[in-house]
Image 1: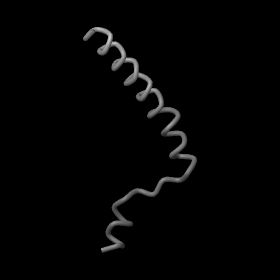
Image 2: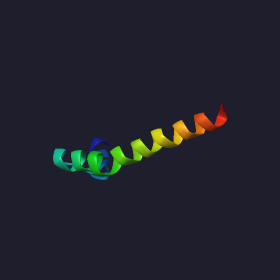
Image 3: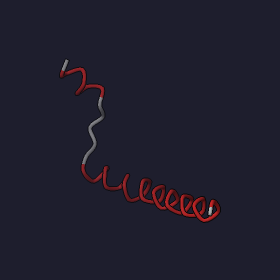
Image 4: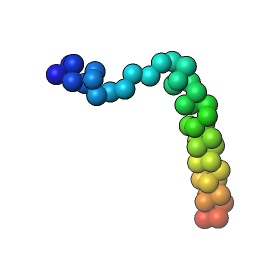
Length: 44
Protein backbone atom coordinates (compact mmCIF):
# COMPACT_ATOMS: atom_id res chain seq x y z
CA UNK A 1 0.00 0.00 0.00
CA UNK A 2 2.72 2.44 0.97
CA UNK A 3 4.67 1.71 -2.21
CA UNK A 4 1.64 2.41 -4.37
CA UNK A 5 1.26 5.81 -2.75
CA UNK A 6 4.96 6.58 -3.23
CA UNK A 7 4.78 5.54 -6.88
CA UNK A 8 1.70 7.60 -7.72
CA UNK A 9 2.60 10.84 -5.92
CA UNK A 10 5.22 12.81 -7.86
CA UNK A 11 8.40 13.71 -6.02
CA UNK A 12 9.20 17.42 -6.18
CA UNK A 13 12.56 18.86 -5.32
CA UNK A 14 12.63 21.90 -3.04
CA UNK A 15 13.78 24.26 -5.81
CA UNK A 16 10.98 23.04 -8.11
CA UNK A 17 8.42 23.71 -5.39
CA UNK A 18 9.80 27.20 -4.77
CA UNK A 19 9.73 28.06 -8.49
CA UNK A 20 6.15 26.81 -8.71
CA UNK A 21 5.22 29.05 -5.80
CA UNK A 22 6.94 32.17 -7.13
CA UNK A 23 6.08 31.85 -10.81
CA UNK A 24 2.59 30.36 -10.71
CA UNK A 25 0.91 30.42 -7.31
CA UNK A 26 1.91 33.93 -6.15
CA UNK A 27 0.50 35.69 -9.26
CA UNK A 28 -2.69 33.61 -9.02
CA UNK A 29 -3.05 34.56 -5.35
CA UNK A 30 -2.54 38.26 -6.15
CA UNK A 31 -5.20 38.13 -8.87
CA UNK A 32 -7.52 36.35 -6.45
CA UNK A 33 -7.10 39.13 -3.87
CA UNK A 34 -7.69 41.80 -6.53
CA UNK A 35 -10.84 40.13 -7.87
CA UNK A 36 -12.19 39.63 -4.35
CA UNK A 37 -11.58 43.31 -3.52
CA UNK A 38 -13.39 44.42 -6.68
CA UNK A 39 -16.35 42.15 -5.94
CA UNK A 40 -16.59 43.46 -2.38
CA UNK A 41 -16.41 47.08 -3.58
CA UNK A 42 -19.11 46.50 -6.19
CA UNK A 43 -21.35 44.66 -3.72
CA UNK A 44 -21.41 47.58 -1.27
